Length: 101
Image (tube, rainbow, N blue to C red):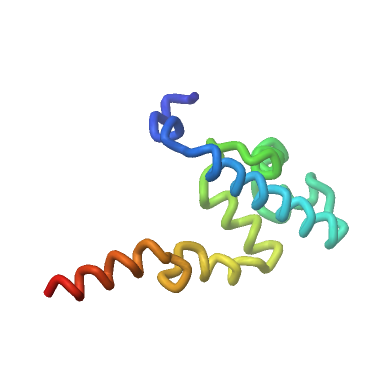
């Protein structure tokens, strides 16, 4: 597990979601008719690193994934990730704190 203990805390659901992201990245690359090698070159990373992203490797840095999304012009999709408007549990907790006051 490469000495990264936090990986043991990653849930199956989170891994499934990351695999969906990796698949979406692969589909976006294919739609643009880029090979994996071309994407790696455009992202200034090794082919192995790019392939690890498409394989949803948990050891790939977020910076590498961000570089890929940037080349694909998809970084705007990150604006909703963990957005308060999508966090029903967070909204409920904030509401309960207001009620207690």
